[in-house]
Every structure is written in structure tokens, then in C-alpha cells.
Image (cartoon, each protein chain N blue to C red):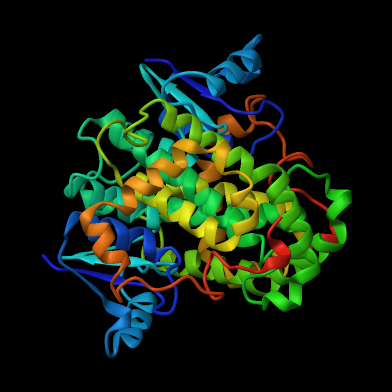
Length: 234
Length: 234
């Protein structure tokens, strides 16, 4: 079965968490909205059908049309060996993923605290304030939580010795934070050694390494979730 | 098995979505943090263990300790007949729930656009602006989406004729919006007839009706997610 992934073609965004899982799995997929006519198809799928998604990303998997990043990964993880087989382990990885995506909203809102529909420049004073609070409180809380989880499996990931999709997502968040907040993150390197080690291990995996070097990997940019605005780099 | 639900004892918050499911299911549960010594136990569970939650709510179900509202509901829904049995239906209800919880973050952030750790009064100018954008754009987008889903099963809910846990959550969101934004919601009643009908149907279910009239149901208040600040009522 060839999966069809639908996501905004110019950004990594939430689609990237799914791309990383598909790539690591060596799954057969097409990044459908980046193909010719793909945007039209994506907009049609958003509008019609019995069970329409609220927003991209969504994944066509045979007859299933699945939305919500964490749910798509839950589905893929079970099918491609990127999650434990036992119920407790499967739920745990899903729980980690949901927490990571909560973190992602807070990362996004550092530059868009008022409305996603407004430009950054139109909410800059509010963004400066939100970003300062983020660096003082939320960033250390979330990173401290994940660092603590990684100490339980020093050479593995969130679910144990074997890589899971939430490890790939944690890699992506670490990459994104390093892009968006290079100064703040450089100052914290020593606080999160396990996170940095995981990031290096994921980046070195053959399929991920090949993917990151390919044109399939969209670069970080200032339309995405992780944006580098020096004035927000706490 | 007696479930133990852990959540901040003074507010409905995210815990309420789980309470509604447990009540509708007639499940055996204790609202653990509201019992004597419960807060201490909650704080201990948050700090220790191999798979600690990031934040409340979380549910102790035998040996499992489950966090993340949507995941707890996914687990309970399958065990108590509050979700379809087929994979596609089960995933669909989970997807609806995740979208509802995305909406919930945006509802919360109308009064806390800068930081959850600051008081409302310390972020009021930003809240006024965020709430205005919310009423103009996000509220109609989310409600229109769910209203459209309900037209597919006019006398049922999000998953068809049979009630599912996401219907209970949609009820709670409708109740909360009516509490927080009475003026804005009154002005929109005619736009969302299916949503109002669902709200009435859920409120009339015997177990839910009994629960809502009991002291187990915490009242809406200005420490919760849905807060009534007249100046934010678009």
C-alpha cells in the first residue's frame, strides 16, 4: 500500500513528524500536496467526505483517511515496528507524542501569541513577552521532563532500547529548537546531555541520514512552526 | 477494577472530559485528588515511576498509569462501549477528540495568551486582542466544523447513531462556551442547531443528568479553562 501524506508543501510543520516516521520505516509514500495538482486534491479532501479532517496533516492509508499528527503516528507506529507491541508500551509512546505536540503548540505560540491568522510583525510586542515566559518556564519544564525520561534508557529512547516514533519526533523538536533559538539552546547544552545524544543517534540512522540530505527534507524557514527571530531567542 | 482519576480538585478542566465518560459508562472510579490525602498522592505519582505523566489528568487503571486526556478517553472508550468497535470508527472518534482538545487550548488561551503561570489581570490587554481574534475566526471555524459533522447523523453524534465519548466532550465544550461567552453564544444559537440538539440530548441522559445535579460535578469558575470575563465575550 502506498500512503498519501497531505500537508502544506512549503513547511516542515506537523507533517514533518509523519515524514520522519515514514522515512525511518522505509514505507512507500508520496508527499501528495507537493506533487502536481496535489494542493487541489488536498483542499478537496478537506472539504468533502463522511469523515473530513479539520486540518492537514492527514494521511490516506487505503480506505482510511486519518488526521491529527499523533493519531497518524499511533497508526503507523503499530504497523511499522516504531512502537512497542504490548498495550502499555503502545499507549506510553502515544502519550509521549501527545506531550511533545502540546510542547509544539507552545513553541509555535512564541511567535504567534495572538492569532495564527495574523503576521508575526502584527503581534511582535506580545510575542516578545510570550517568548520570555516560554524561555523562563515552559522550555525548561518540557525539556527537563524528556531529559528525565531518557535517563531511564541511556542508550535507547523514550520507550526503551528500541527506537520509537516519539524518539524521531523528539529529534525533530530538538532540531527545531536549535534552529529557532540557537543562543538559548547553546546555553543549555550541558543541561540536556541525553537529549543531545538522542538527537545525534537519530541523525546518524541510515534512512534518516539519507532523508535529511535529500530534497524531500524541507529546510526550516520563517513560515513554519520553528522560526528564527533573534529577538525571541531568550 | 476501580479506576483512580487524578486531577486538580477545584476545577473541571481537562479532568471533566474523563469524568463525563466514566459517569456515562457507570464505571467504578474515585476522583482521587479530591479525597483526603489525594493531592499528596497525585504529586508523588507525577514525580516518580518509570513512566511519569507530564501533568494531570491521569488515570490509574490497574497497573497502567495513563495520561493525556485524549488517550485516557481512547482507552476508556474501547472498554466501556463509548466508541465504535471497528478500527476506522475507533480512530475517527479519537481524531474528533484530539480536534476538540486543540480547540480547548485556543479557548483557554483567550484569557491566558502570554503564560499559564501569570494571572489573567497581568495579561489582560493581550487577552482582549486574542479573544477578539478567537471570536472572529477560530470559534466559528471549529463550531462550523463540528456542526457539519453532526449533520451527517442528525439524531446521533459524531460517530453515528450511538453515543461516543467525543459526543460527551462536545457537550462539555458547548456548556463551557455558553458559560464563558453567553452573549457571543446566544447570538450564534441559530447557526449551530445540531450542536444545541446534541447538548440537550447528552444533558438528558439519565447518568449524565444525575451527575450534573450531584456534588461530583464541580461548577464552572474563574480558575478553570472556561472563564466568564464579560470583557472577553465577543
